[in-house]
Image 1 (cartoon, rainbow, N blue to C red):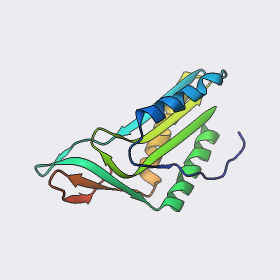
Image 2: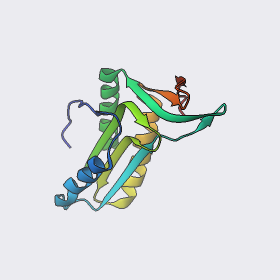
Image 3: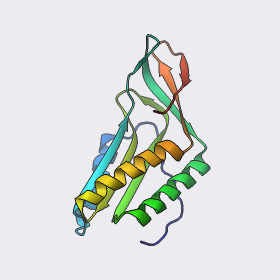
Length: 147
C-alpha cells in the first residue's frame, strides 16, 4: 500500500453510532475485503475513592499524537495484510457510556484483523500522547491513569 501523510484522527466530543455505522457502510463496495474488526473504547463510570466518573475530558499534543498515529498505521500495514484501517479519537468532554476511540481494520482474511486490531489498540495506549482528565459527579477531577 502507498505510504500516506499523517492525517488528523481527532473528532470533537464523543464518536457517534451514526459516524461508526456510516464508516462501516462505506466499505460494502470494497469486495476484496473478507473481514472487518472494530474496537470501540467507551468511557466507564468507574468509582474511585467513593466518587463516580461522569466524563473524561481528553486533550492531546495534537501534532505529535497525529504523527504517532501515522507511525502506528504504517507499522501495522507493514506487519499485517490489511486492506484498510481507520482510527478516530475524541478530544474534549466524553460522557460515561459514550465512545472515545474507534479503530476499524479490514483484510481479505479474518485471522489478520484480530491480530492487527490488538496490535493497534495496545500500541495506541502505550505510545500516543493523549491525556484524559476524569470528571466526577461532584465536578472535581483528576488525571486518568492508563491501565
